[in-house]
Amino acid sequence: MTAPYLSISRRIRETPFTRRVEEAKVKSYTVYNHMLLPTVFHTLEDDYHHLKSQVQIWDVSCQRQVEIRGPDANFLLRKITPRDFSTRPTNRCTYLPVTDPNGRMLNDSVLIQVREDCYWLSASDNDINLWISALAIGANLDVTVKEADICPIAIQGPKSLSLMEKVFGVPIRDLNYFDVEQFDFATTNLLVSRTGYSGQLGYEIYAKGSQLALAIWDTLFECGEHLNVRVGCPNLIERIEAGLLSYGNDMTQHNTPIECGFGRMFTPATNFDYLGLSALNAEQQNGPRRMIRYLSIDGPTVPICSQPWPVYIKDNQVGHVSSAAYSPAAGTNVAIGMITSDAWHDGTVVQVKTPRGRYEAKVFVCSQNKRNTRKVNTC
Image (tube, rainbow, N blue to C red; front, top):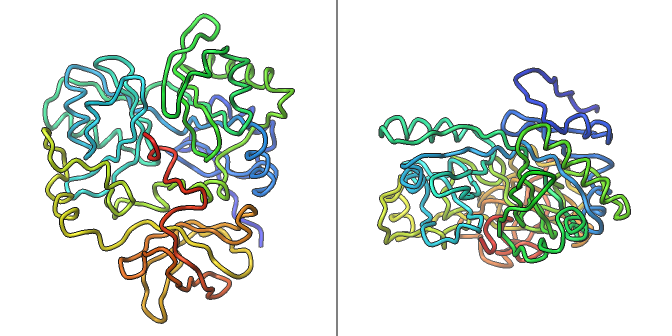
């Protein structure tokens, strides 16, 4: 059966790189923050092998930067997250789970402090800027909230350092995981972070404006020709292997940060009263009823998990799988799911009901690469 076609209209925004992406013969898109995000170029598995051995340039303009600027910017940010970021160095990206008054996840974001009174919140897939704007207006705060004209480019893969060094010089070597610094490009300064939505070595460039964004993109390809550089995109297989969670898939507004494995970031004894404080306090004291876990699934190669697959012990449902793929590295199907407390222990044997049948699976606390997410491991 042929997959349905995605109709493109003005409601789905192109990016400054869409023409370059289509010249590279993109095979499929998804929609993320109302923008096009490529998902496959050659095949899912071919893209996976190239990402793990070479270097790719990704159009991640959909990773919108919510700019929060003004005297009350810090105060506003401290109301929306259970993480106390006050002691973080300004040259470090900081993972921020954004919660509602019930302690539920509204967004999982990365925070960059641009100036003393200006922050960028690199947002996952929803209109979190509207929520933050409404809070600022309701509290009559002296702050401006807007979507900045920033077009991020991701450079991912084991050869990414070689490429970045050709563009930005030897100082790029000093950038540690989750550091963010300014680097010269042409006649301007660019923010560059050592981050990215893969388990490989990677960087992200925060390009200002469409014209400059395209110049950076083309320079990366000119400098990377000898490195077998390709246009790429986040890869389903690789992200599951690396344990990278996807907001809207593996975690939603129905989950708390503690259920998603971010409990160590929660600050119960805090000097700021963030939204969801009492709810998360209660959950931490009583313990969560379910948590993110990783699974290996026996049987034939699984299809794309477009809807949750139930997970059982005998006839008792103990959770669901939200993302799954066959992993060439593991030699089996790997998955991410939300599992209840009676089945979330390492090595628990369960059954997963897929569209192709019910198969035995095993639960693991950590992913194949013993990581959590691109944002959480050391950030």
